[in-house]
Figure 1: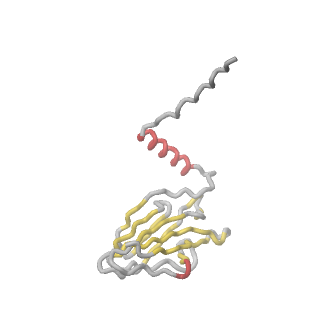
Figure 2: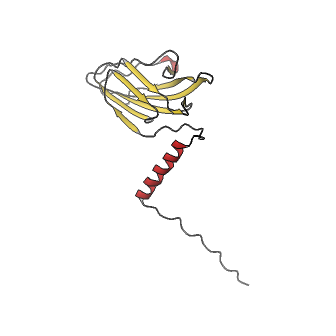
Figure 3: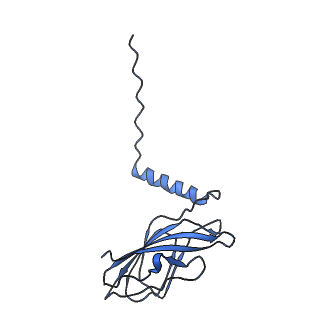
Amino acid sequence: MVLPLPRMPDPPPTYSAAYMRQFQRVLSTHISNDTNNQQATPSIGQVQVPYAATINLSAAQANVFDVGPLTANVTTFTLTPGTLNQNPDAGIVCYIFVTQGGAGGFTITWPSGAGNNAFKFAGGASTLSVAAGAVDLLTCVYRIISTSTNVGYWYVTLAKAFA
């Protein structure tokens, strides 16, 4: 007795690139508007940030920032965590590339103290590369240290001199 061969499953459908972009927009809108979603949902993308003496970034805007090239010192720098139901989201990760311009040697005054914008550097290292054209990478992870007050810090590692 010969048994019939099992039916092979149909191949998965092929979707156009336009269809997939629309699907991603709908999905991201659904996730962003889901008030029961307990996960941090920052926008994912890269934002070019030109030099300015004051730079204000938001993790709700993007998770990769390309700052510079620096042409002078940055005297005020903030990175605001994203929010879900009006509270800062723990676990958000942002990457900040900083490029030295001109002759190099420019500095950034990082946020310090207590609060949602403070930076805590691994090993206390917070000095940028000084060579013109040098690219440094800051990896920033937001951690809430007091759930009663929603106070947290950005824990930051600095990788230097990707020129």
